[in-house]
Image (cartoon, rainbow, N blue to C red; front, top):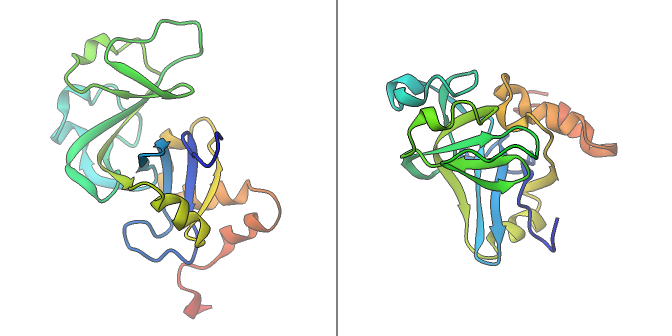
Length: 187
């Protein structure tokens, strides 16, 4: 991490974060700098198949092949996140690197130009956005844990279980948070 910027890391909602948009959410931070932050919720699949909204891309998305709720901002627009193979191979046309092997796909690019150049792809409706200093304040107030992302987190085949899995792999007391009940009043 450079300074207090979280690009490429995961924001994992703490149990104290009860906002329905983010409760038990896992956000992959796509961009974070002095102008603010942008990310997508990687554990919020919808029931809407990609074929019903972006059929031309359906062969390239990884399972589950549904549109994901990326966040509460611009929910009427789509964003495609894709992973390219290891370094040394040419970057596909229509793909822009964000961090490591992850980048955004220009959905105006013909899908066949990316077909052999990406390893995994996921579609998101909307995104999560923070104004300058807002995310840092939310982290400081205890709304988010900031943890390292692992390969595959953004493209997991079990997105609903990601919150617990990410917490479970953390060191010390943070791993115990994975056992926190969804409704503590029923405990």
